[in-house]
Length: 297
Image 1 (cartoon, rainbow, N blue to C red):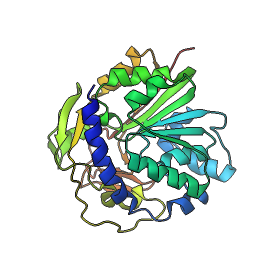
Image 2: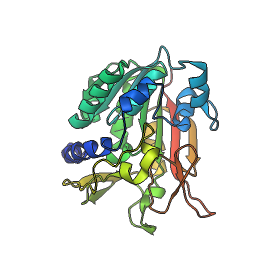
Image 3: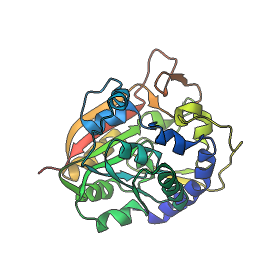
Image 4: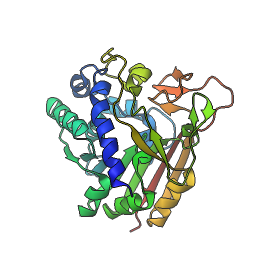
């Protein structure tokens, strides 16, 4: 485990978060009006429903709150938009992130929307062992695991905060897709290989446009350059699923997707309906990996 490198990454996120937020128009008003930053795929995994269909639209039309009565932990929650969107589905939510800048933005957004939520600034590796087994769902998505330097320790700690029968739900950009840069095989695949990103966390919100700013896209900060390098860890499919099995979790769902939600992870990708990006090639590799695993009991 590399807590020292986690703190280097904190600096990069502290720098990037204001740039990302600068492109998002009136997020508070959007959420107050019933808007959501979630994608159907995430909600299908959380609810345990099928892999397809516009479940969010159905929920919005019906006024249902399908997560009512559930305590949900959002690990690596960033600036809290997804956390609050989960709260709108009825969950009692707690968001944890290593970046104080991101958590400050999340707390401000919660206050402005009036959506109840708890937030904490912490390295998950420090925060999780101090918690009781009180959560029904742990939710982590989109580039969360690449910041985690020890998957076995992470999933063991996540299992430890779950009630018996509680679940870990995750959706990540596929490890195979993350090997490529500008169409060329560049990065290692698995084993937690350490990758230094000298350019730091870039402005992927600006690159993705309305797909990551459903409240409305603003030009915001232009030509953002992050002064802090990043330290990432490459985990393959076997690493991700195996760590959950070693933690005593029972895998219930594993899915692969031929599109990437929200983020234009390759420059030549095109946006499809539903804020999804895919390639123009007829041979599309897996672009996302999703799973749900349960603590027995």
